Image 1 (cartoon, rainbow, N blue to C red):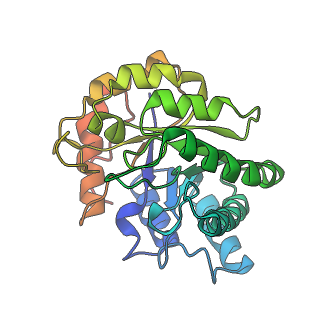
Image 2 (image 1 turned 90 degrees about the vertical axis):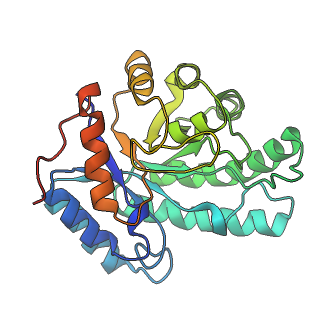
Image 3 (image 1 turned 90 degrees about the horizontal axis):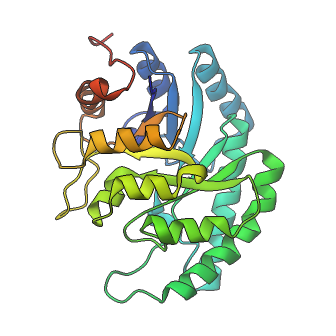
Length: 276
């Protein structure tokens, strides 16, 4: 029975991370992917005492932060500008420290941002990302936090093949892959093939809904992501971690519960029967 983890993207403007954990744990959820984003969970102005308090909230709930994530609008480790890459690496070093302080094993990394109008050659973006990750990996290894590189349509490695090639060049257990079902589906990738290709590298998986015309991270049922296919692919890959719902919705709790009910017949843990 696969567990569900809850990504807190839908709460970044409205609710502190500690309050999210308290409320969602009341509903029965025990795995969380916390979004690093002020005011929800600041990277700056969040001192050691605040970090200890948040970790205590998580532990008191009998929960864990299985992964953390940082929206990609404010960083780009594959920028052609070295000053932007350096600033982005500094942000991720701080994010690694925050993850370590919260006992979180994996930090999801969006590998840069590419202009859809005129993107650089793959060799260039790969070189820039390699340079950035090589600067981060020693710090990640020291702090016990892994980097899960994600397939994102506008980023350096949007498909499983290019993502695999990038991740496999590093001989470190502190780097793996995050495979997002909506992202793979949006670019026309077979989720079965994508998961199979990354099977031994998978550390985090994301699930939400979209169609192939407009990129979305909707509640399950609003798009046409083949969720049953994705669930079977995870089983075939023997992925034993939680499946993280990364749903962006104006009513995040309702979207979570509706989505959970939609997938519980596919080998996922049962959804809460009613609001707590």
